View (tube, helix red, strand yellow):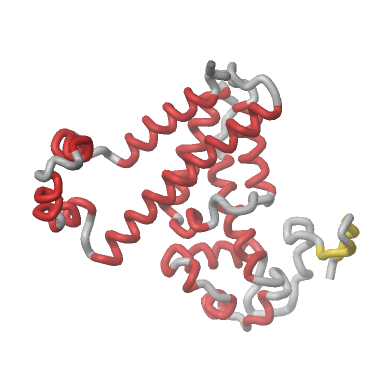
Length: 244
């Protein structure tokens, strides 16, 4: 066990800082990279609820105990998986202007979550601290700090909070809608059609005039275009500086 001293006592080194176990004479070579890739493939197919050390070991053709040489628990496994996804997002943060960088990271985060829906379940909690997650955080914060309306660290904190709240909320809503459509066998259009007669009766009462306008006059908005439009609106708002 690799330990480090902290203000709270001695604790294990994070998985990022522990060396890989020494190679063993075994039919199947292992690495954290290989374990994470297998876990991601299983989570993509079955979600996080269907993810287990035993299932990963079976997929790799090894005994479950061998995996504990590389990850000590499920939390470390998730950390590795998440950072693989962040590696993809980090690749979008090119050396461009601040606005282009922020937009690119946000769109790459959405694309990654749509490809790996379980990733959306792990957004919005405690910060991810893997090396690629930190690279994404650094690129986003550094870019946003250059925005004209960001004048100090408190402005930057609030702007990052607002931006992340939008991105996480929008992504989770979109992923939830996709899952609901699969689980029920009914997409949004079919669901709306099935509730049409009831909604018509309610709107005909005249008690919900604004909702009625949205239903009758509102267009069917593409999810990608909506995300892009709302992202731009949020970004404009949080970088415009203080309002009277």
